[in-house]
Image (tube, rainbow, N blue to C red; front, top):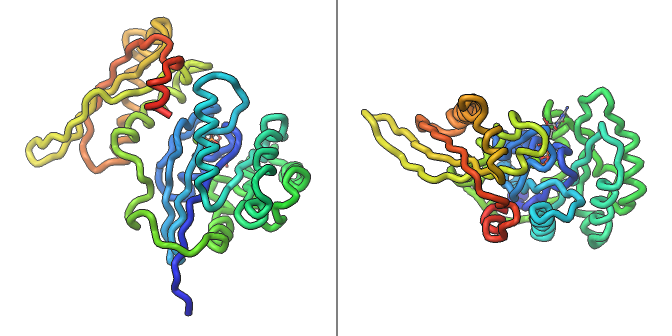
Length: 304
Ligand SMILES: Nc1nc2c(ncn2[C@@H]2O[C@H](COP(=O)(O)OP(=O)(O)OP(=O)(O)O)[C@@H](O)[C@H]2O)c(=O)[nH]1
Ligand SMILES: [Mg+2]
């Protein structure tokens, strides 16, 4: 019997809102990445870890590849590109309920430009959102055959990341393709992110859920203070976070009437944080303006 273990970094790529982060969470069995209906939710390479008898797969979620000349978008695209270059395997996620247009074509063309061996031996395509009534698997399959002829037919899977269906065969396939190697992380972890980052992301997720239109893209979240305190034998993580907007008018919307919006964001974030961590949580959120921060290279470098 062969007991050599396998391990691989697996890049998850696709266009905004295809369901990449939902997929990452479904695969690793925990909330590693935040999810929202707003395109361009993910801003970083988020890792989700799967441990099995056969070895370890480290999935790396990426920002949706979006055609745009804006500074933040260019950086987001670079993150996806870097992840693609650093991975052993690639998972290309497509939305079964949306006909592929220019954006999807641009991504498929980018993948088609990879060495043929990468496509024929290291890539799988997932046709996601098969639970939706409008899902059209055949249309996506035809698109893939046309744009990525080097991708074998048996490497295209129909899945629903939301309903967690079809994922077992995807994992079996990825383990079969993975090279031999040692695990990169301890088996007890399903993500490698630190506490500070996870808190900022959860708060940002609530902003994405509750704030409308373009506003969520104009905000960033910073942790100003964080300390673990012990009160009568209970460990309390005390956090002071700041939501930063680009303009004062946006700040007013995030604060809401009499502070109603920021209160709603705070309560929803607290609920998730209590699930994620074993500590009791004390969370304070301030809203401040940092004029045009998305044009500030120094901040963008720190953030993305
Ligand atoms: N019906 C259905 N909805 C899904 C499925 N997977 C994801 N979604 C929804 O699609 C939306 C986008 O999901 P995300 O996982 O944030 O998408 P993403 O590809 O990570 O998006 P970006 O980070 O913006 O690139 C959310 O509202 C999800 O709930 C699925 O299998 N079925
Ligand atoms: Mg995402």
